[in-house]
Length: 140
Image 1: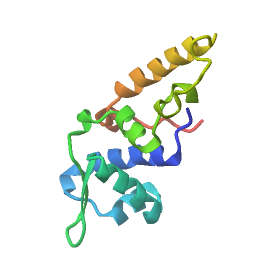
Image 2: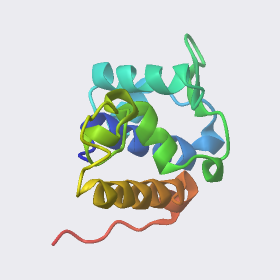
Image 3: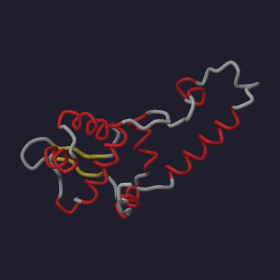
């Protein structure tokens, strides 16, 4: 599984909105400036999150974006599934591609299933609130 910039940026944006929730709705430009993401690319990400009920968006004066729930009610897994689709480590476990004719006799499928469960369990166990509390580690 390789998480794209869309998934990584979505998480950054949600943490940003959670950290600035007391300011009310946050305009696109402010988020883009703080996160160093182009407004055009960010708009695409935000529209996905609004469409799936993660964010609320309002256009015009006084408009902007805010979270629809508290930060501890969003998991990293939920956000990544919305932005990335499948989080499966191999395509044969993906719901979209679960047509492998060798699955019944595959000698390695159990490894991939276990890894899939580990990834899923881990990402569902980390909330946006957890990310807000995390301290960025120094660059190595």
